[in-house]
Length: 171
Image (cartoon, rainbow, N blue to C red):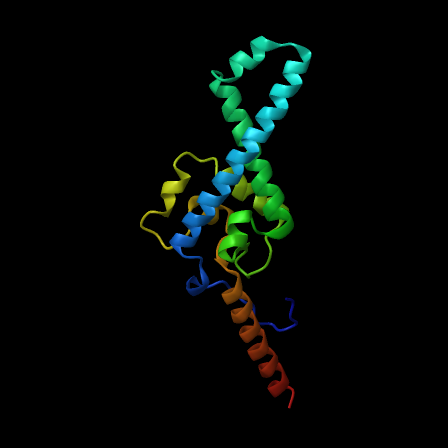
């Protein structure tokens, strides 16, 4: 929602997604990632089995670095693809939340990449404890997860008030 007004909309804490919404986002998105992990494993195993390399399949279950590499790759692809194109993941669709920048707009590709990489920080999930609904991957990337409907309503009110000010100043 673009506006020619000199006033700029800024995200406020009253439209942040609740901690329960954020937890549900995490839970749903983790389930999706696990599902994707198993799909990737089946594809890898089928390809390797077709080539007859049973040693690799046997090693796959015990190779922690390979498992971490695959799960990290899946997580980065999942979050980047979802949030770059729609600013939402499956969990965010379910909870009616969306990722935005400080002006309530869709973040840039670079910002989403930073956000996704920050999810890999150890104990990132614990960064929500004791603060107002923003984790390290939010604060470092300067993004916000907000209630989509409240954001739309607040922006509509903000820009209609700004338009009224412009109309009245022209008289």
